[in-house]
Amino acid sequence: MAGKLTGSGAGILLVTANVGSLFEDPENLQKPWLQEFYQTVQAHRPHFVALHCQEVGGKNYEGSMMHVDSFIKELLSSDAMRDFSRARVYLDKNYKSQEQFTALGCCYFLHDSLKNIQQFDFKAKKFKKVIGKEVISDTLMSCSMLEKEKFPQHYFPECKWSRKGFIRTRWAFADCSFDLINIHLFHDASNLVAWEKSPSVYSSTRQKALSFVLDRISDQRFERLPYFIFGDFNFRLDSKRVIESLCSTATMQTVQANDNDAVDKLIFRESDNDHKVVLQLEKKLFNYIDQDVFRENSGKRLFEFDKELSVFKDRLHELEISFPPSYPYSEDCSQAKQYMNTRCPAWCDRILMSASAKDLLVKPENEEKSTTYDNIGPDVCMGDHKPVYLFFRLTSGAGKHTNKHKCCVVQ
Image 1 (spheres, rainbow, N blue to C red):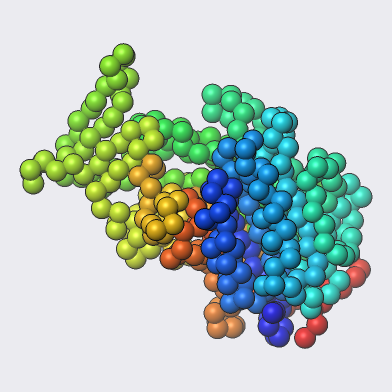
Image 2 (cartoon, one colour; image 1 turned 90 degrees about the vertical axis):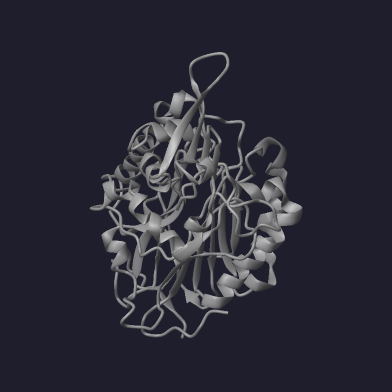
């Protein structure tokens, strides 16, 4: 499956996917999801695939976690992945441990042609050769091949436990080594609260959690390496500013709850044009009159309101986005391109990297279409999140040797 290796180095495919929907309705969603994933692998023919999943087991994980094993078994045994003879799968499924449960899943697939790839043992503090296929879930907390942490409880809004945290793994091959971090940050619990000020209180919570992760993976315990951090960041558009832009000619009506003075609903109407409703906003309702604004030209009109990453501009880098907001898509298989009216569409799912990691990517001028940053299944229902992927080839000789065993790929 993997293409002949050129001087540009190994092909790397990084994918982030919030898979919660797949376990709520596995009968209708899993097969098309897997087909689109396989097609992406076959189209780019990578040597190494890293699939980072969030919400493993679904939103109602107590009733849906049973479907996870069959999903992973299909991934590992599928004909589309037959040339990936080595794999490592790490699943956080222990929902009975609230203090530790993150519902994160990390799946790594190594192509036959990739020789001497090694993974870091965080306890032994050395790289080890990867042989065969392993799925680890029950012993995840004691597994030394990864670092897993849940955010401190005081980070959680209202101090309620949530499935948010990160997992780090470390890899060495193709003359370089780097960290891969799977992350899931806090969501917006209420559209009304998110609208109150700019930036929103939720944005500040995500900023604090992401800073925690960046500090943790760059501390003094281990050698600092280039890193790719990809997952569901839950980054949202600046709600107050985007609503002001979308409803610039509208008047706002406030509807209060019957039993108190709290705002229950906001209704924005055109000043003329028969006072047509432009937007209805409730805690879990974002019903805008024209969804095309989020789809046309990949939603570029709204890029100026995507500000949460700017705080980290000196630490994190991202390639240019050329796909529409990745969330919240309809979970109705007949409405693959339609957004649900629960939240303002946003680029929640991202692949970010350190400056040193960005240097590992072959520059586009060196090889035509060497790098692609896009979503998976734009025309197919993939659940409420469209997976996002980054494909690139490693720059020859880039990166840092961390051991004496030079890694290579058969040409």
